[in-house]
Image 1 (cartoon, rainbow, N blue to C red):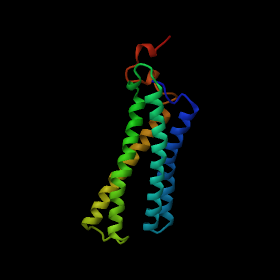
Image 2 (cartoon, helix red, strand yellow; image 1 turned 180 degrees about the vertical axis):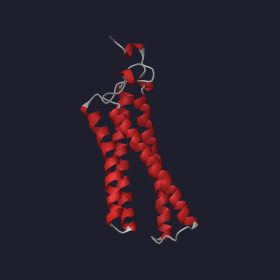
Image 3 (cartoon, one colour; image 1 turned 135 degrees about the vertical axis):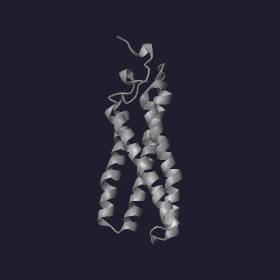
Image 4 (spheres, one colour; image 1 turned 60 degrees about the horizontal axis):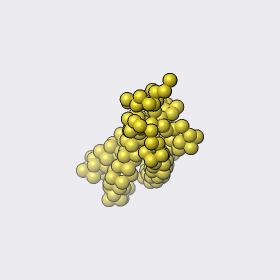
Length: 166
């Protein structure tokens, strides 16, 4: 399978993974260090939603390029396709399953968390799931960037014989 061969493909994955890393590891911690907790949470939540939208667009285009435009035999065996699919799945699950539940719990609490209540414990558990998914996605993105001078070739799970031309 070919992929990340074109400058556009490289730009798309760099933009998506860069957004994940900058918002998650630089901007969000800065917000919580400088703003009142509920305000920082509101802003961070909005920014993470924007990062998800970037992921839908960039990841969707990359998957489109890989699945529909690359017709070489063996393209589905490329590890990069599976990482990209996992990243998109995590992004969709986080944005449409976990994030709405977190938002609902924040709304019910009204910004006033009573420590060690069932509501606060449920929020903490979901927030932990969200954070874990975020870390996994950021690491998968890093693997995709670092391991992909291009998709395919010697990095395939099982390269097709026609892919190994000497």
